[in-house]
Amino acid sequence: MKRIKVIITILYVAFVAEILGAWNHTPRAKETAAYVAPTTVDEVVRENQQVLREKNAQLLYAKQRALELERSNEYHAVANAQEEKQQERAWKKEQKRRRRVREKRQEEREILERIVEAEAGGQNLKGRILVANVILNRVKSERFPDTVKEVVFAHRQFSPVQNGRYYQVTVTKTTQKAVKMALKGTDYSEGALYFMCRSASDPDNVAWFDRDLTKVKEYGCHEFFK
Image (tube, rainbow, N blue to C red; front, side, top):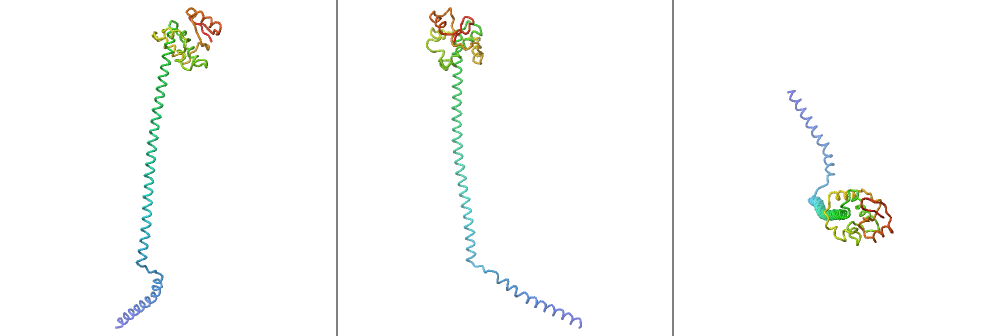
């Protein structure tokens, strides 16, 4: 019986404590609830619309950026294509120029070989180089044309051109070697711009050489003047 009273007392105390605890917490719950702003349907809708506008703005910016990049890529593609065409045209033009230069050099060499053969085909290597030197000296001189072709075919300058021997000769390897050496810089001429073979020349020409020019050397059958 005594045990039952103790149990009842304990239960009563616990009940009272629970009631008091609930009472103490009730004002704080009400106080907290007072600071929670009520959320309406319109506010939710406005928030969703704002989020949607932001997303649409981001999407529009992304599309504009993509369009700008696409246009930029197209521009650079066109620019690159034009640059490639220009480079190709420039390369072809340069190739043509180089080909013309090679052809011109080959023509000049052949003319020089032929006039050396016609003028000094009976001379040794040095005698042929000397004749080539005179032709090249004229090309360098301001008193004569600027190319071998113009020098050789100038009016009444070289008798083999006038009498046709120039066109009849067969260029030998010795003459080819002499011309090659002269073009590379071998020079025995001492600046000579004229030469003659006294025994085969017209007396009037011989007289002009002796009177108006300065003899610089003699080699083989040729005398050299400037």
